[in-house]
Image (cartoon, rainbow, N blue to C red; front, top):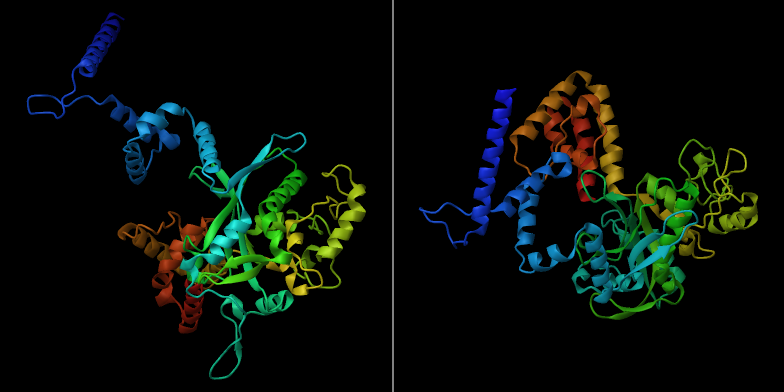
Length: 479
């Protein structure tokens, strides 16, 4: 007991001695530079900073590259004097950001929706018609810009070919509908819930826009696409019917300025500075499977009739132009009008086979009356990540596992060697036994494996199988 008490007293004395030294250093005049006779100045702020970057993210810490970027931010001359002293938390800084965006006239605004029994839901958006004009008229998009539909044919056989969007039947039908005096603005939308932090705690729901008029290579550039708005993430406690209705209200509000120009058009300058009357038409809405349910108003789960409006069976939903399936806009509007009173509680359904929740889809706004080519349900398509990384690739891996079950360990060994002995920093290879287990991985991990797949399996496949794999990879990287 006495020895323990003595040790505790000694430890306490050492602590206060070190604390006094630290205070002496803090109170002493600060030399501009440490000399051989002077010890370096104790920088308490730096020690606190190091402690912080090592403790964040559940004590995993920040990556060195992120720490370096944060240090560069702190070096800004106004950082310490203003930002760190005026704002005590992230919400205050985000509120300041929105205030600045609105005040600087950059076209951003906020819209708040009130849902009964739920907290207010706020979305941030910019004027979609102005964004449309900015992309259509940006001079950086001039190369390969598409104005009119055209027919592309094989020089040798004369057979029609389909390559760029302006060679497809959709563009020809759209041009015939609007007349020769106007030009088609082929709108491509993309929306999906995305993570803003690696731990998944911070999420956002962006709505992006580009134009099929812009060449494929230019769409990836900053001149070829833009952020139209961000939707809020509703709380999990919100009933699914309210989420569906709320999402439609968000989307209609964000795209309303474009709908206003569908009939009369917009007078815009193209990338070469020539004024043209341009009418927006929905060319595609790229999304993943859960997002497509929000856009089309379909329900997930085991129901036989998953449409929240019509009574089409799940196996018939793809037949959007079939006369036997009520998947046209006019049919669905009739159903909503006649069945709105069947269920006063939107969470209730009549029977177990269909929903009567009257969700009026944002897609309906894009329909052109008496123009089957404009059926907006045809515009919904999976994005390239879900087609390739999370779609076709799984079938390729399943075929490899079926044909070469004894080689899977060899393939995983080769992948491990590539992962451990290469310095390709932009590829993030999976840490699991990829081929043997077929683990459920992120798209970027599948994408990394695709970069080296040929080298891993080449000596085990037949020439025909290698040719099929080569064609897939050629299509994938071309996309």
